[in-house]
Length: 170
Image 1 (cartoon, helix red, strand yellow):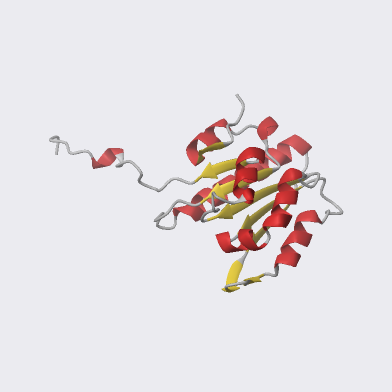
Image 2: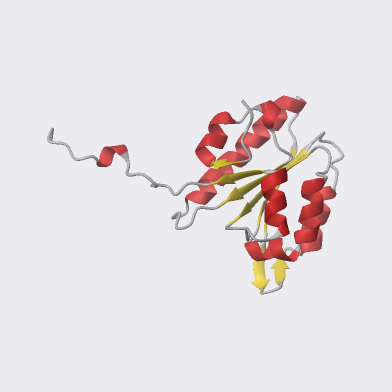
């Protein structure tokens, strides 16, 4: 079964297979998620690392990068450092898995570079991008939808929990 391009996290997790590893995956955070995004993101990162390890027969080099907005147009770490990290090759690992969490404003600033990365992903690198949103009206958003996998995190209780049902057995 092929992975669909845009899906909910639960479906992505259930259908994820070694042969379906996408070189670029975007995770979109749920609004009002009460801190559950970090749980799902960690699980996705670990699942991807495990799959790449099985595929290559060796543990990949892994790195988590969290980009924070310092001012409206300034980010920490610097965008150039992050882009260099994407293209860097590890001397000892045959592959790399990078998790890059950034605000939507960072993607807007580096959209031209991200478009190049999506169009021609670096060899032996699996990129997991995480953001609160990407403006759907942009060229970048259209390219993301066409060329990568987009996974939406669920809100923790989109549906009422099963134990919240009223019962007369008490």
